Figure 1 (cartoon, one colour):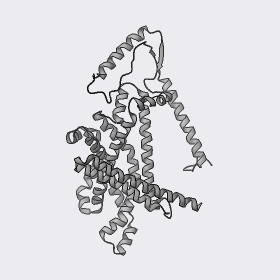
Figure 2 (spheres, one colour):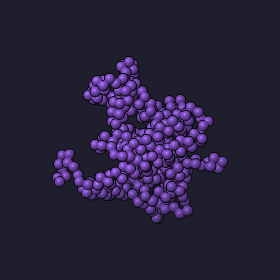
Figure 3 (cartoon, helix red, strand yellow):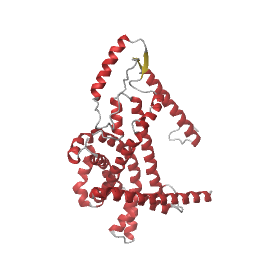
Figure 4 (cartoon, one colour):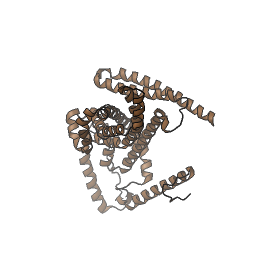
Length: 378
């Protein structure tokens, strides 16, 4: 086919080949740019110019002043440069791809990257659950009832223009400096975008469906349950997927406020230490996490709203839907109960975990049935 045809479609093989070529071009440009900005640095025998990690330091051990140590290293480098006879190539602006790949073993073993990533993911999940729940409740109230639309729609739309990074001090005053502040900041950052979108999606519901249920004598609640909720949620899933990238931006900002752990804290420390290869390695981990999050949202969308992708729902969809509702519902219930009753921590989450595992088993059963049905059709 003509590769320059407007809105032309690529075949599967063309898409694969061009994707590989594009990736290789990206790596080549990156590598060339890293070499172009590289410099020579004197080799100082017996001197370690790498700053130690300040994450998870022993509180009872000697504390390290990172700024003083960095200034000492800079002074040592300037004196050594004048008398040096041997030099090595360094990359102060952009690390080359091999250096980024080689930094992963140390990130996993010394810097506890898996633990910090899981911490950030859990904060992200909590913020997402609160933001989506609050946006749906208030979005439907504002979007469906003229009284509340007149009272609050203008304020809701105005929230999108708030510079959220300028509100970090306010959230610290309200929620403290610990995880509660980070979750609240992330949730608010998503709500200001998602709440107006929920109202917009309600306005986009086609009138033919509303006229049909009105003709059938449906009550207001029946109209909401059978028309508004399915129509709004089927479109809103795409909006929620788009907000995944925004959520990671806000969680990184929140973790910079008190560097007590998480990917954002780790990135800040490695950048301060000049370990750019580790900074880029962590950024690629965030991209990978975001990709998997997007796949999960796409899977949920395909199973809860199969009419968008297939003409008839095969066997297995009911089981998958039940499992998805069980996992999402029990997680939200756990977050609400843990916020209301802080004393139920460990016992509560053990129960949530067991129910979530049962939900995942239902999802697995449904996927097995869907796969078996598709094989029979073939």
